[in-house]
Length: 472
Image (tube, rainbow, N blue to C red; front, top):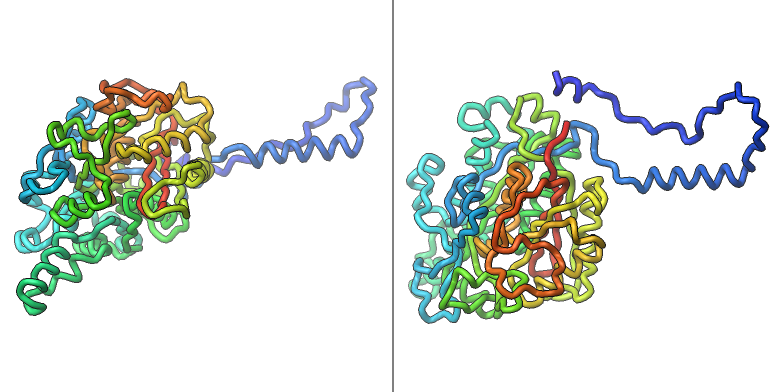
């Protein structure tokens, strides 16, 4: 009944700008001049236009009904968040290949991954891990959304899409193909080299497996990829082009060429003697980020569609924004303009004011320049930092590149659901300029009003998404 009432309710109407006069009063009041009335009317109109306005149309409101992941802590969302709340580090020495000659020899490597029941044996042996992670996370998200197995017959597959991006694509397949070409010639390159290396194939294979015929492509904006996908997926729903979208990011780059490439960029921590304390966002002794991998995926639906099928609603996607620093390939703008304007735009799209935000899942990669650049940009938007909690998921799982935003969105939604924020671990010598409660080293209880999650990528790509608890 509540669902029907909400779907049938009429839009709210603004009150008349002029009050109704009580003509029975005999007080002789001089009527306001035309100039005064016009000025007052303009002021009221301006105030109404400036006030944040959240979406009310059930066709355009976007809710989260399922979450799925593959992470260094396993493939179960609740287990993943329990380990985050416990402040457990997933970082360790790399043993997938011989990393002994690299200046960085550790990362958030996934071990013991199994796709049993989600990918058939032949494809499981053949696919790049980037693709395997996507398919498993996507299917687990659908199960979480009560759309596992035969239950998918409930939905119109022509109006269900997939938008899972990746920063690096099928890097193992690509690296192996290049090695085959150099060592044995072109005839030894696998025919799957191109299909499995290109970045759109994760979305494509998941859609082929599920029969989803709606919008399908990938976005590749380095470490901002997942948030770009959430933003685009929500807009497909808002424009009426889809009822539901599977969206997020996937990445599997902890291989020799991936590690070597970031070493060449001088971006990685070299704390080989103590890998678990290497990722330390906002700590004065940070020395670079730590590579991670995995996939994080959300099922996003219009509120109308979710309610019609009586779906579990985990949270609401309020809005988001994307833009570009237009400044440098790898360094953030020193003035923070790109990030601060992206946050402003995301709040405008979400229909919320800066004062309503009380939790930020920060990009916070543990790099010397990036951490403080983000904080300085955030301060341009949020003048009062006292009521805002801010934490860093990457302190425990590393930087999962194109999948980072997906895994961090799941952490954000779990925080909204549970009322508990996971700690930012390895806060030994905090930067005094941060001036936020970074949930240092211990979890904290916190009732979230509005949360934002930031993701930024090489190339100056900025993305911010906003979530809250669902309220009918």
